Image (tube, rainbow, N blue to C red; front, side, top):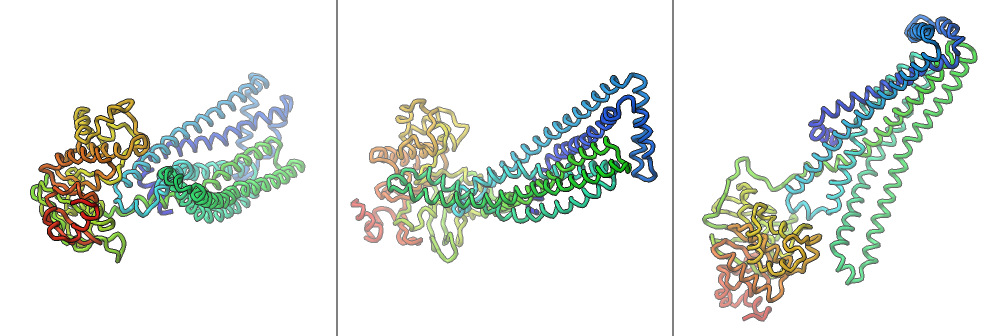
Length: 616
């Protein structure tokens, strides 16, 4: 339950006024629930006794007065009935019965008004906590490094943002509020029952511990199944996400049955877990209800004997006792459900706290260096990196990128080229060596300020379900439409954008599904152009373009990279022949460096790559 305490301390504490207001009005609701039932007693006495027998009823109550605290209720009842008898004589039995009924209606109205106000404050609490919790989770996701998402399924992250937060909002907060309200309600009702008949109430006190023991046993076994169920729900969402994103691949390889089997296995396992949870969860309420019913029958039998033998209990008191005992069963049942929900929901709070406390890994020093421009250049100094222990991706890489120069990284796939770009953007930190920006270690810089200096176009065009204009303006939200149009023109995207049904206001669908690969890439390039950063990282930026578009966009990129520091990763060597420096990598190591002509003259790996692409 430590995770629950952390969630409440961080997210519920700011809304404590709503919490305590809800508890206060819930207590009033519980109090008036008992009072409204007790208020029916004089009406029953009048109806059962009849107006002719009111004096006999009063005398009968007086005879039942005994010493001790149990006689206090009878004495209070006698004084109240004496007051009633006086008013009956003044206004008449029928009129006074009308007054009593109106008073009871008012008490029930107040009871439900208090319940409504309590629920209103609870809604404010729940919505506030869930809003803050979702924002905190989303902020954490934005802050977490790229490595976090390569190790986890998207479905699991989505279920934490939706299902786990929903569990906190829908069940846990309600359960906690009920834990404050229901004990008070139970105590008030028990006190009333004890006053009416101590001997009958002992039966209820015997049953309640059995209820608590059953609920506790069921709740403890629920947590493990709940955590497994949440994990498997995340797996189901991941399979759905992969199916939606890979629809073309699934169809072209006739893999529908394979994906269906994978999905069915996950759904069947989730069903099994859901059945296990349902059996345990639903067992709590019937068990407590059955024990309550047994107690009810015993009370009815014992109370009936007391009435038949004339041993200190009249019919109206017994009927009110039965009504109150039924009212006691509901909060007892609610309390048992709340305890079960807390055990079940603790799996969700564990997962939420686990995410919120996940190490960001990309740390800044206490006093980071604020870098607003780059004056000298970038240096990879003996850089080493590994995603997993003892599996190096980069080994002793040293590259110097002077200010305003273009450096191209080439080599076969898996050589570590994209990893260099990711390290420069500080999506990861180096495992060894340094990356120096104007002589400052990249890890000493203010990350947000540093990334303002970077622009990036990746091999995979990452676009969002929004308009074309908003996708381009993502890099510069305050840009004017003239700037957006100019960026699109430089990226050779303006012509096809203007052909769209709504121009720049056209929605491009999920991930840009309404656009071709080349069109998506040109919008991504326009986005980078609009930012106009001093450092550009181009990771296969022209790979998705046709020959004509590639030539036009390459010209635009050449213009963009003029007097700009650029790191270009390319497989098509024709696009980087004019680079100031070409670095050839193989298996994570730099094996050649030089200009295009210098590397050709070396007749080494670069020359072989050129020959393989039939380029002279």
